[in-house]
Image 1 (cartoon, rainbow, N blue to C red):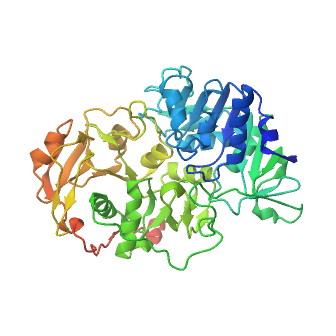
Image 2 (tube, rainbow, N blue to C red; image 1 turned 90 degrees about the vertical axis):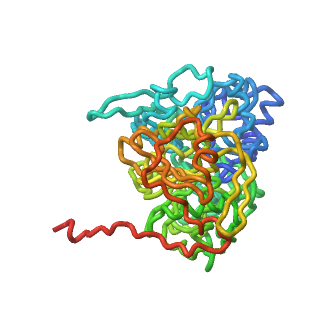
Length: 525
C-alpha cells in the first residue's frame, strides 16, 4: 500500500477494466478527485479506454461529475448501474447506442459485490420478477446495444428466481475519511457506509486493485480498530483530498455525518399546494409504529406533514443507504439522515428490505397503467433507472405511490377546502407504461396493499388493476378524472370524497391508526 496523487492512481487503471465506483447521488461518498483525474487522463492521452463501469447507486450531480466522468465515446463500452438519474451525459450515450447500457436493482448490485468477494457465483432473488429487470421482459437492458444477458431465470423450490451472475471487479474506487500509514480507513466524516468494504473485497479477491480517496492521513496505531471500516490489507493506494466535501450541497455537517445529535429537528411546514395535499393523504395511510421508507422527491413531503402534525415520533424512518431512525435529508443530500439511531452498510439494509422489513413505503410514480404497473425508470431518451425502487416497492408490506394526476398544469387552492383543477394535461394514468418498474400483477397475486394518491383521486390496487376509491371535493368524475385517463378504471361502489381538511390551510390534527397488536405471549402459548 502506498499514498499517491490522483493522477498516479488514474494511471493504474488498465484498458478494458471493469471499474466499480462506490458512493451515492449528489456527491455523497463520491471519490471526486480520483474520478476527475481519470477523466483528465483519458482526454489527454486516450487512456484508459474500453472500460466497463459498475455503480450501485446514482452518482454525480447532473453537472458532468460522478459517473459522467466516464461518459466519453471510446472510454466506456458498457455500464451496469442501479440509478442513472444523476448522469445526463451517460444517458445520452446510452440513448445513442454508443455504450451497452444496463440497469439492475440497487439491492442486487449491492449484494453482487459480497458474492464476488466470497467467490460465489451470483445472487438469487425474486426482486424484479415481472418488471423490466426480469430476463423474460428485457433483463435490465436500457438500449439495443445491450445484447448480452446479465441475468437469467432459474426454478428452485417450485418458484422462479432471477439469477444474476457475479461481475468480476478489476478496479474499485472507494472513499473514506481517514487513513493511517497502512491504509486502514475510517468513515467518521462520511454520510453513509454504502458498499465500501464489499467493493474493496470484491476487487482484491479478484486480483484487482483498490483505490481509496480520503481527507486525512494519520499515524499507524492512532485509529481504534473498531472504527476501521476498510482494513488496509485490501487497499492498494490512497489519495489524499483535504478539500473533500460531505456532498455537492454540503461541505461538512456533523449532524448528517452522525457525529452529533440535534436536540430538536425542525422541519418547516410546507406551503399549501398539491404537493402538500398529496403528502397529507399519503401520511394518512401510515400506521403508528410503522417502519417507513420515503422515496426521493414528492414522498419527502410526508416527513414534513408528520412534523407539522407533531407525530414524527409515531413512525421510524429508514433510508436504503443504511440509516434507521432519525429524519431523512432531502434534495442533493438524499440518502443522509439526521439523528439516525443506527447506520448499517447498504447490503445489510437491502437484506432487511427484501425480506419484508418495511411496513409502508411512500414512493413517486411517473406512469401507472390499467394493470397497476408503475414506471419511474424510462421515458423516451431519458432513462433515470430504478435505484432501490424495485427492492423497496416489492419488499414493503404496503406501498403508497404519490404523484399529480396529470403532468403539468396550474392548480389553485383557496385554503378553505376547495381545489381548482387545470382543464387538461399530459395523462399519467395510461393504457400501458413504457417500462415496468413495479409489477401490479405481482402485487395483486401476493396480496400486497397498494395505493395511488393524487391531488384529485385516490386509487387502490384491486385484483385486476387500480380501483377508484376517492375523488376530490368538487371534482367531476367524468370531466376531471375518467376523461383524462388512458383506461377506464373500476370504480368502487363506496366511492368517497377526499377529506376536505386535506385542502385547507390549517393543520389536520392527524392521528395515525394503530398497527394491529401482536400478542407474543399468546402466540407462544
